[in-house]
Image (cartoon, rainbow, N blue to C red; front, side, top):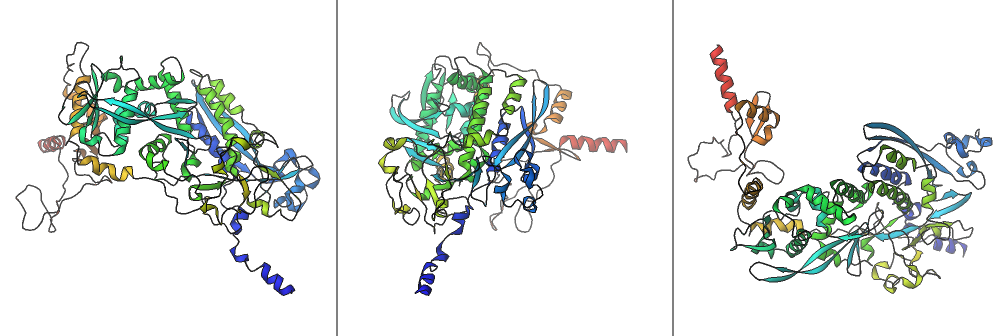
Length: 622
């Protein structure tokens, strides 16, 4: 009987996933702390020069029991509980070295930060007691709440949604299209203002792949093939008629851009549209009552800080989409409909995290201080110093507690001395920062329900008696990847960039962008009376100086033997390489280009006029 019980108890040992109890999906807390401090570099005046991480408890003198310093186990970092006196905490020490350079002043600042030390990879000792950080289950990237698409960042979600807008074209046609709104920094505004302020309108149109069908012009140029939205008597939004219907996103783009242009419809001019400072001032008005380029630039710093390095690294997106905050929101907008259809209750779209939760409180504390500095016009040098001085040894320990033992945001459980201590390691919660909050009565029943993807992952036999469905235990045989994702099949929608070029190429006018750019530059060169401003022709010596200083702008490049013409860029592939055309046998024509035996053009060095003159001068000397 005893043999039977022994074999029965161990029959399923190989099905248990030890990585769940070892928490291998989690990253060290110190990595998040360094990433937060590194993110301070969004302020041009601050640079994190270096850091050092001390894990040897004998070198952290503040809380070592001096009577135990000769214990050989201390040198091996074992029996760490003995290092802390009653009521004390065990931690490692992170030393950060910053450089501050602003207002023609420079200073080097060193700050120390206590990092709670993991005991056996699971527990912390805080106040002389063992505490266990809970596993939080959160969304991979986006989730839908109501009709709002939310994107998860370390701090708080980016909220994106659409409303209906009516577009009245000059031919009398009226179309209803969606336009985007973004809820950021507690302000709802047009998301395109951030892009226009950060990139300017030319790069902005190119970023969304619509530069071949959309322009902002000051007159109606081709009413047969293009649709025009009137901003005022001297400004129109031009969009190719067939291109407008080529993809569902184009209508949203036109509606949102038209809304941005109509903000100051009575005062905006063609010069304003193509002036990046104008858009910086317009963005600053969203957050203040006056127009200020400096305020707009500081708003963009806050905008860039939203997406930290860890958020970008864990996203299962192409590198271009997670380059910065702007590219992430672009991905949300171009794939908006597909992201709305994602099932927020499917564990395929969720992941687990632990230390990131504690880092959230620390990051939130630092970010509040950064925003306070950014809200100050022309901040003095001392304010940057005070920002760094706000980081002290206990900052992370205090902030990561989440407001107290009984706080709803506290993500810790104190050790329970019973037979179920091991199972506590698999305890999860849906509550907490950037998770589900709102109290027992305010949380919707759909978040407490059981879904097919929960079977075999959540232990549905065990449920919290006080807050059902939001906390529980994970199954011991749960499978996940190294980043804590429940499924390897968790790719994100990304259809727009795969199809948009081919769709628009079929309807776009050949050389449209070049024609419109030339026209716009011509119009912008006019004076206040409408006459084209003529520029003095440069002397040969002045032209040579400019070519030597900016050779690429004049179509040449410099090598050791002199200046050479840049090759034509019409036949470049997507990787930037020249596409060589092969002549089909039997259809060869007479041409000046030499070809090899396989029919490929033989490229030879281009001899410039300057090179010819140099050769003539050499021959004369001889």
